[in-house]
Amino acid sequence: METIALITSFVLILIGLYGILSQKNILKMIVGFSLFDTGLHVLIVTVGYIRGGTAPILDQVTGTSNVSDKIVDPIPQALVLTAIVIGLGVTALMLAYALKMYQEKQSLDIRDFKELKW
Amino acid sequence: MIRNFFIILIIAGLAGVFVSLFWEFGASDTLTPLATHYANNGAAEVGAPNLVTSIVVTYRGLDTLGEVTILFLVAAIISFFLKVEKKGQKMAPPRVSSEIILTASKLLVPVVLVLGIYVFVNGHLTPGGGFQGGAIIATAFVLLLMANPRFELNHRIIAAVESVSGMAFVLVGVLGILLAGGFLDNKILPLGHFGKLFSAGAIPIIYSLVGLKVGSELSNILSNFQDVQKDEL
Amino acid sequence: MNLLILITLSVIMLVMAVTAVVHKKLTVAVLATGVVSLMASVMYLLMAAPDVAMTEAAIGSGLSTIIFFYVLNKIRKAK
Image (cartoon, rainbow over all chains, first blue to last red; front, side, top):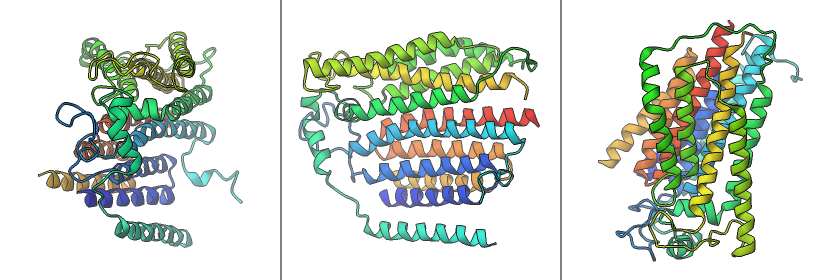
């Protein structure tokens, strides 16, 4: 089970990186970044998965103490929780920059922006 | 062509790294020592059934504070960046929404708002919490904005909610230093009965503040993108 | 059974990711990204992470797609 999720996350990261590197349109590059982000989140959650574990929420069935052999790892989940929100913030910031760049040059092609090219 | 060659080279290199990582990866059957500590003592120390919440709010509370700060900075930069000068500018003709969206938004917006509040108030008992609840509240504002595009969120109210909840978050953290073990300690209130709504010390308060702050920040970002739609380039 | 669902989800995710990168139309690419996020949230649910699943469903496939469409709409209007 975790093998499939691991392969999916690796391939998603590679597809996202290919999108970032190969596309000329700035919005398509942001789409690639978004895919990369999703792949990373799947990867981190997969690393914390324990075979046969249940969700890290305690109740009468799991008991309240000595539950370490029943639940999955809660730390990667807590990290991904914040990472998703930050990912939305970064995507929104990039889209705002893209909009501003479009208003500047009337173009979204990355080859039209040569000011910082050497 | 040389560009495509470099792209393929980079992708192939990363794929090689991933393949070697894949062979190293073994499915683990036991938790790491830190996670074992959290799992065995989390219920007694923090008193929240949802261990993810107790990690996000109490064990790693400082990270959450930093994360909310980053989100605040993002919202501030976007509103600075997409600022629209109101005077002397032609407004685009208003788009008329369909009857279905207008009626549905009247019915659904209060329900979605209540769902968001439920999700962040019960963050320590059920899956969910401040970030999810805040996102759901922002979704309600999206529905409102879609139904009537001329609708303007009152920026003063949003700014007030955001700054008051942020200040209160830090204040609760400082109270933790004075009354309990350290910054953002949740034992400033009694832990209460395990599994009840008013339990786990200050966690429901802190997560509600986080939910209000995240909800107002995301709504602020969305309303800035909406304001840009109105003026012509 | 879970394994079968997971394989289906993973296939849909990868197909949609390739669509998002290679398709000419930006609208289709953005929608495909939203589908990838939605499938990822179901995958989190199967891997015993309900908190993360809720966040991804609300933020990754909801708000993120909407912000993309705001920007697309603005650029289409300006043309």
